[in-house]
Image (cartoon, rainbow, N blue to C red):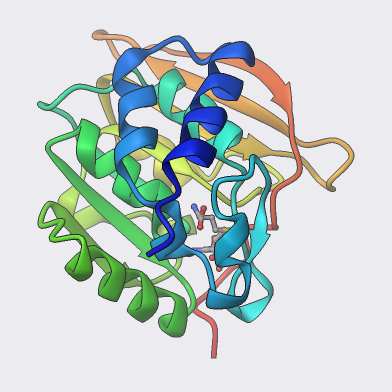
Length: 213
Ligand code: SAH
């Protein structure tokens, strides 16, 4: 591990300056060692506020984006969360600290296996992850109180809307290409009505149909 405390404190201060005010989110970022989720060659940069490459041409998201999306979810320990795009597993580990259980789907088996090793190393036990196509969600475990998608679809996947519980929140990047993507927050009220907010412009890797070969 390269759990550099000085770099980490600098990162937390930067997140605060950027508008992350939820203390539970900040303390989750402080406690989850991002270096464990970063490939060895980039480990000395794990606490910089930047996205980094992981295997299979994917990326571990920028800490600010992870914190921003997590804050939008308004989590607490009673919530059951679905995450699409496990990737490195870093965002998954942050969600796991702030919710009851996280179900996470990744289309690359190798990424999933590496992420699961990190969960084991950190003794995180409230994550259930599997290989699959996130466009289909996880119907056997639905409904979910919160849904977070970490790859950009062109439109909001209908299966995910169908699997969002009343009083639920879904946060996801949506947009045709990397110049027009935005973070959306979709809220379902207790009566089942949906509302949508278009928030931050972002650049995510695309959400791709089907499981990777
Ligand atoms: N939260 C991750 C982000 C990884 S990048 C992290 O910070 O490490 C987005 C991930 O979504 C990639 O690993 C990609 O393989 C995955 N992905 C893309 N389309 C998907 C789909 N249809 N189903 C499941 N995962 C998908």
